[in-house]
Length: 142
Image (cartoon, rainbow, N blue to C red; front, side, top):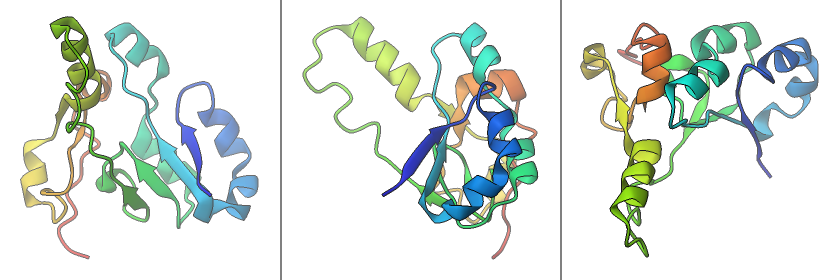
């Protein structure tokens, strides 16, 4: 059974402080980030993911909604967010908001060199508005 942890500025310090507790269940941990609609909320909640994972330094964890290059030691879990996006929706406003939250991702131009480029959707646009593209480091080979 996976334990999903949505990383934020609220829980990241506790997670780093209690790293030893996480080590006991590292194979069951799924770290993810939530997508936010507003820049204000994004700026208040997002953490620097690459910096967090460098400090955490736990292998055998899983990542969702986070590129492999942010923590190459982790296993990536993917989910299809685009299919079924408009299912049972009649409002264009609802569709646009869902699309923005679930499908508005971008990558650095450097990602074209990465061996995971075709499998990676990048990061949500509001994460990029907060931290930019500097965290992307293409993985050239295994």
